[in-house]
Length: 129
Image 1 (tube, helix red, strand yellow):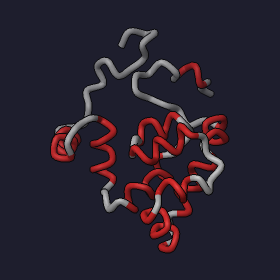
Image 2: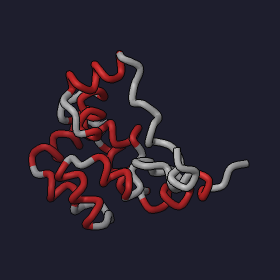
Image 3: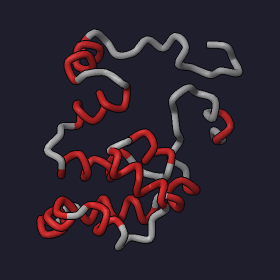
Image 4: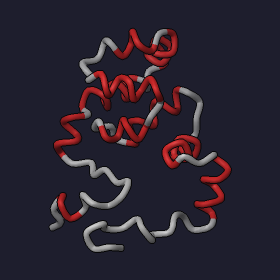
């Protein structure tokens, strides 16, 4: 079985562990609340007020307000829960993923159609690959 330290040096990778799950519990519950139309309307009407109803950290709330999905993941957000936020914004998974890579949607789609990112430089730092 692999241990977290087997993966903690992969550039740009946050492993969703049980600790991360606990850290992001309220963030992820907030995301799930957006499945109800009435909650989406309340959130869109006053995002900060709706977020303040949840016992999330300020960093988690700011990640949502900024739509900084990478920061949300570092704060315990799970991408499948975070998808409720970008769906609420009318964005596709491709658009959200592109924003997470610093690419336009068109650049992201082209990269994925060409086979995705090169693994060079995206593997273990300790192992030098």
